Length: 149
Image (cartoon, rainbow, N blue to C red; front, side, top):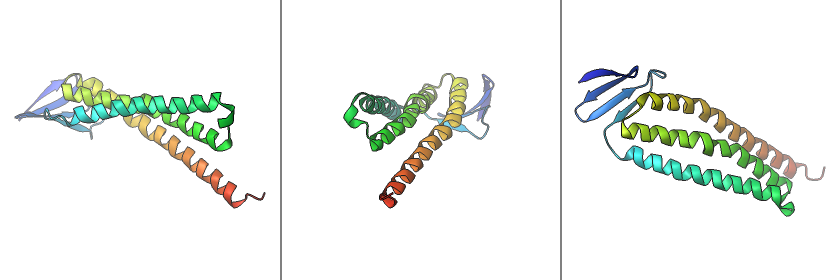
């Protein structure tokens, strides 16, 4: 086993497996063994990302353009689509790009930076969606409990 310096990131080689350590997040490492796992997960993320963006945009557009769909419950769903849209635009493509960079074993520095950015954005956008879902659940609870008021 030997180690070499690659763009200020540490990489070690052990027979056919490579382990990459990110300098921006020292607790993060990737084992690159030439398997197809990163390819499969990357392709799934790309397909899911496109589906997420297209379907959420269609929900927003439909509710905005059709007057008969502009009911309070549909407007809440439109707001949920707005909170899910950045996940499909930012988080999923960035994660797929990291998978493809790792798979191709090039540009580990960029993979590390993208992964660090993804680690920052994912909890923020995920918590936004969860908070919005909580708001919808609270509003529905109030509507059911106090329907007479």
